[in-house]
Image (tube, rainbow, N blue to C red; front, side):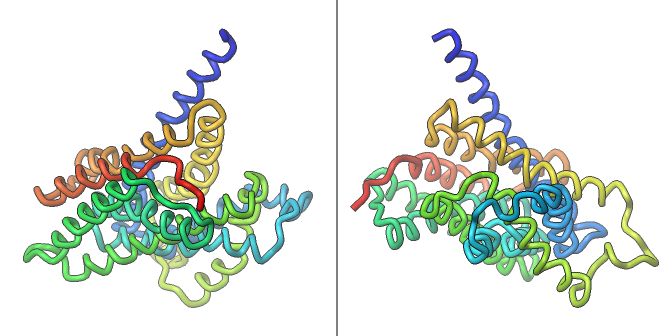
Length: 299
């Protein structure tokens, strides 16, 4: 029992760190796409740096037994498509929209995919939580059509919801196919980089490839470190370690705090103060995310 208590404490500590990193990722990404880098640049740094790190392991283990087509599917979930929809949305919509719409839409799409593919039936409280998430997202959607908002903020909202769909696909196929951590950590950056980096270099607008006016190196280092190392590896390792000692539902509750932390960091670092209706949407969605956590009944 004495050995279990330190293990539990370490698991809780790892779980509590994750929402701070996740919230910081949203703010760092928003900062990156608002300055010298384009969303395409940030996406390239995310998959490219991660690919460089795992390439020696790839030369030894390949995809660790994962079929290429399955690797392509999970790469779609959290690789380049997830990065492009996330960063594209963050370039048009504020931090609170990124935190609420992406994190809030994940459990909705996961519930739909779980029902259609895994035959999982949500419980009553979970359905109520999903309805609250929809209500909170609707508040933010209405906020995007107010008089003083940028013209294309609604498009950013749609991209952020698309990012939630990508991540829900990733989580669903992980459970369906029993993909290991090693398989995922190799396949996602390698496949994403092989497909996306050539397209980015040849066809997409870039501040990073503009050698006449190169972006400030501090911004490049920040995005390379946060996207390619922290978001791609450290968060995954922390979640894996946490779920070894605490319940997955507890971990999900911790993650529900990420949007609030992102908003607070956005106010402090980016001076993005949400409107009253956006604050209300954040509260409603966070409650819904907590209620939506739990084990679903299998048909």
